[in-house]
Length: 489
View 1: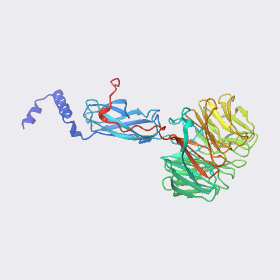
View 2: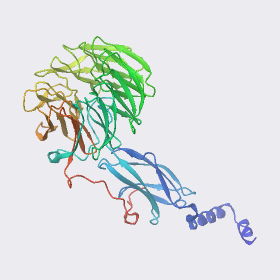
View 3: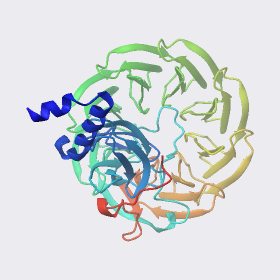
View 4: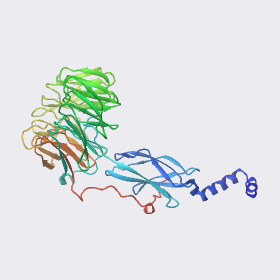
């Protein structure tokens, strides 16, 4: 009763001050601090939204990524804060990292982990630029120290380009199987048997693996188990890689069609008939699908309807897949040329003539286009003008069908001389090579500091830095050792 009389004598302001004081003194009543993150994994430069509760009311709370103080939050009267944005640093190497929230007045705090990954989920992304802008382990300085991490033997040639998602490598083989391999060891997790060769690169989106096969079908598989979710039959073999965008699978077939399939059900949304086989893999950007055909043409199709927007005729078959960058479409042709076309109109901007057919799909990074040719060279061209910056000789005048990958200043590519090469992207100087037991028509993937590629010797290879040279993700920080940044407001 005395307590009630005491509170009844306070005016409004006094009551608020007393109430807040009691809340501050009894902060433990709000429970142990906890934080949640807007996402549990992502590449470097990802934005994380951090929310928390159970802190002292009105407390200032430092938000750390590993040991770096990134933001200062202010709890409300209930001891909560929400959606404080911090970046995953560009330097954060693949692996487990920690976000910590610590009260500035003491060391009461909590932590949540985030997995940093630099994945390679499709032949490459919707615009097909074939570069990994997040790679921060391998570089010009250390690519020469790459060594064999593991190899996995299939029962046939591996022309399929590996893709990497969630610590798993997905790849096809001419033994009619699609494989899921543990990225760290190469151990087989599962395999799925199609009716014929699986030369196509796979695509992994939202827990589903999409596969094209020479049996004429497109398959959707559960990424965890390999169980078939659906299949769709085209009129001929499928060697093109699928591209998945906005819930739609776009893929070509040697029956001459480009197909748009519902990614969830496999139902056909539309198809567009070209004049010959479609071995090119589509690129999708701004509601438009770009693809090459054996009828010598490059096509731009409306992504939602399949209606033709424009076509451009080259001098021969177009099996190369297009790459899009800054409103320009880059694509090779068996007439020995690489073309740069205005993406909106199909108008020719420039072309560059190599010594033989260009079946390789170009990569675009930092204003440079990289592409291989069957004359045995890899070319680097100015993306704006088409002028040659350098060319790298594969060691013999044999076909370079493999498509290059650019990651952190290094170009990786396979050659008909049975090699995988790493080349300085700026100069064309060879940094490293590895001799496999067969021609390398597969295209590499670079993810999480590892280079993956297939060979016609039947193996899938993984290359990484030698033990002791790799960069290791930071250990879990001790909350008591974290130092706040006094400049944060």
